[in-house]
Length: 366
Image (tube, rainbow, N blue to C red):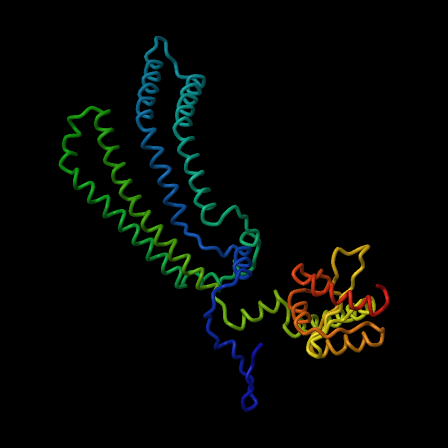
């Protein structure tokens, strides 16, 4: 934690830091685990309402015909001779009404459930957040409850709800007023025609309300996404600390790399006595080559170094009577073109072969 000590007082600089950095992938993942995802309840509501509207619109004709048949059957039942109402008759009528209602309501309710689940999955994915449903004493804290009730978010939700009520009322008023003169003719219509007329007006009103609610839902989702992004913004200090946690402390990483270099250097120096020749620059570069025709297709670089390491390689080579050949172009080419354990590149075969031939002749192998 960054702190400033001034006249004996310790000031936490993080209290004054601004959240100016975009959230990292780790921060987003942690927020998602806690259920902090951009989602709008308006999207769910409007999709459920739309599914219900479409269900009623397409099933309404069948509903009217079915209801006519049902009532006709019931009246026929009442018109039979020696008709008596007992529990069997009432049970039969109740069963007929329940079966008819199920045929109408099950598709509508099922469509609404599918629409609600689809809206949730589209916004948050297939996710079940245990953190959002587990017991927390803060949820029953009256002080925290009052803060939530009188918070800025609650005020915004209240304003949004009032606006929706006014919008729905206004649209309904406008549409009803358009058909106001036609309502006087309902008394001259039969039941089927008047029901169809009222249903058409209601469906038109509901459809226009849904269109406006779709616009509100889109605006609300954009706002919720912006608000969620704002809540996840990070301070530079937080990004730095998270980087240390994920990647490791730079000082520790530096020590690890230093230790790895030392171990690599030790392995290299242990393998150096097996070298056939050391090619130098003469002072800046040194590359040690080994060639065993029985096991190698081409000479292999078993050690290389620059400046201080190059000096160490030459000293070790002298201790083990390894031939040192000065060839500036070849030393530089091998140093930059290969790594330890690599075979000599094909374009350097000729030059390396000449050096090895010289070494073997010098040692009396040829």
